Length: 239
Image 1 (cartoon, rainbow, N blue to C red):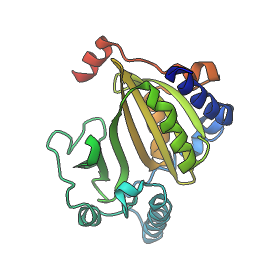
Image 2 (cartoon, helix red, strand yellow; image 1 turned 45 degrees about the horizontal axis):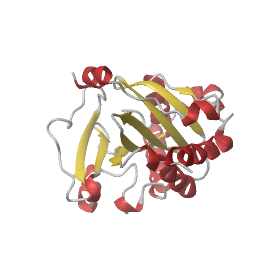
Image 3 (cartoon, rainbow, N blue to C red; image 1 turned 180 degrees about the vertical axis):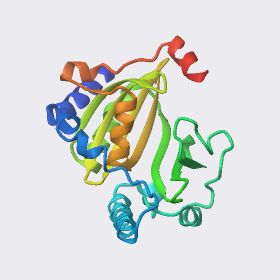
Image 4 (cartoon, helix red, strand yellow; image 1 turned 60 degrees about the vertical axis):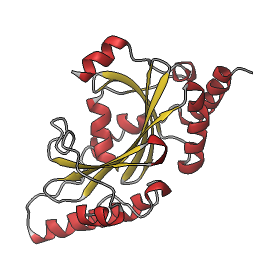
């Protein structure tokens, strides 16, 4: 059996478990959009409510962030993350991203050429999102990778085609766990596969899906064929 066929079978099995769960956005999206944790000024009761939301998010997300970043959890302060991950440093190019106002970032090189990006709310100084960026050796590695994700997080709660992830198309898989959502984002270009693990509050993930124009995958046949970025799209995204 060819590697491509094996990849298709593995992805198809995941689709069979997840098809129909696209109502994650359709039925619940309105509520999710209000779940984003953002600390703003308010009275003491509101401040305590927000603080409790951060505590709950921190407790939940600690179990979802990979062991590679052992101890890191959403809701931690910049100082706490820097104490745990002293290699994490500011990168002048991404410290403040115009596409994500209100956030500042630290970056850390990981083994195997991967990179971790930590996004903090400027006002609260709390960790709002974690991204781990890496390259897969080729499309044949997608199936085994997704099987490992399924083993770790369970069946995906959403599978998406996203035509505008920073100007390029991607395929996304999401695993929602209450307040926290884990996303796997795949960019295929020139035979290479860029894979980003993205962990954030569920409301933040919903906004990201909406911004990228994501729509639910409708069938296993569609899911087996990942969108491929063209050279023109890649050039436009770099501008």
